[in-house]
Amino acid sequence: MNTDELPSFKHLRNQMVGFGAIIRINRILRCIGLGSKKVGYLQGKYDEMRRQFTELTEYPHKFNEIFSNDG
Image (cartoon, rainbow, N blue to C red):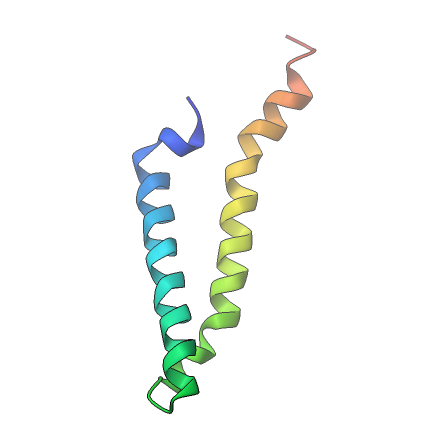
């Protein structure tokens, strides 16, 4: 089973996509003076969380790659 098929990963991925959209919308609103500084502050944390999530989803692939030859 691929990690993309797991319900918890799907849910978390959907949540991260939604949060990324909020950050992009906030960036546009900041240009016209309506955005939130707090949401802008979370951009760095969001990038770090997205990187960690991507890394987490790659662990099963790396594990299988390493041990597939050993059986």
